[in-house]
Length: 342
Ligand code: TRP
Image (cartoon, rainbow, N blue to C red; front, top):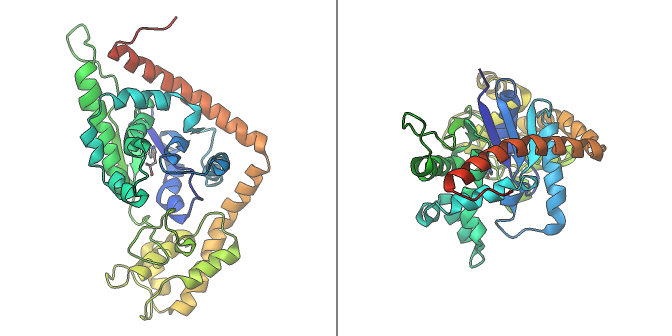
């Protein structure tokens, strides 16, 4: 039987941090064993808020290189850049024309981002979830690994596929049964414990958009910077690290990070650090963070030293992705009644 297909992507804005790695990319690496995996760098999404053209290409390339450095294997996964496959934009347009405006206006992330943009909100920002639906639906993805914040977007992709395309436009087979045009994807809820929180506030997620650099550890931060950020991380006056105390979100987060980075189970980590004060714990956490990132940083440096190799990986990814995407787009164009070219 064919393997279930998985698709996911990250925006090339800013650098990837521990939250992206431990919460998402590390799980993608495991999925390669059992699934047909597609991973893209979603550069078209990156321009939905004002962006710096001088950085887009470099950020796209470095994000792709970090996927590989983290263990995404181009022999097993299709790794590509969203804008290199024009079918994403084209399917997004077709989906735009069947998606009710009020489905987009009620998206939580749009409302949050729109507030931050003030009076500079682009139509693209509103349309972001439709482009994401196109990303997913183009590849007939069975499963999409998503965190809590992306669930509403996946739900939208399902509704567009099911209610707006399949229910309205599916052709019928000889028995009068509808032949679905788009596969309706399911969310893949990732294992617990991988929600990495900010170093400066244990109750908010580690995020690229936090203006405070000290709130996150980027995958390419040098060892001294990692130590410095951990040293400055928010603490509390209590002695001993522990999980699950609602009064101590920072202890919970940093102990969780220690467990993930040191390869310890939560039980082991809790017993390792139950008696430690912050002054003893922080240098230990810094050490395991530096050690865990060292091989990723080394592979990253090797990959960037061979731009031709990286380019080839993305070209191969573009080819494979384009093939699948073209077939889906053809089905949708046909179902919507477009005149064939040629
Ligand atoms: N919106 C996603 C995020 O910010 C990124 C994304 C774009 C994505 N297209 C996707 C994720 C398709 C999964 C599948 O995390």
